[in-house]
Length: 43
Picture 1 (tube, one colour):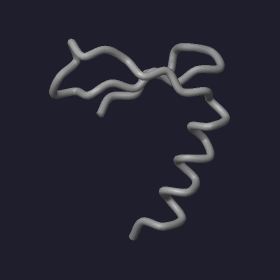
Picture 2 (cartoon, rainbow, N blue to C red):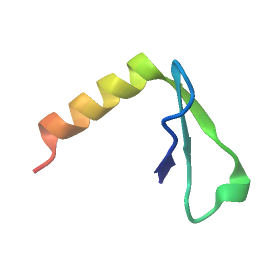
Picture 3 (cartoon, rainbow, N blue to C red):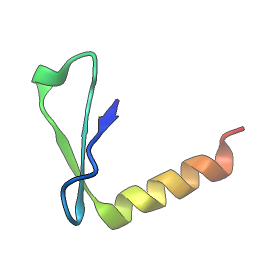
């Protein structure tokens, strides 16, 4: 997975093994919630 940080208010995410499949655009706030939830449950 690759994440770009240069797009204001959006977080572009793509599969690094299949970049031709395109990009998923996620709102920055939703991405932040996802990352916080992941960090709180991962060890």
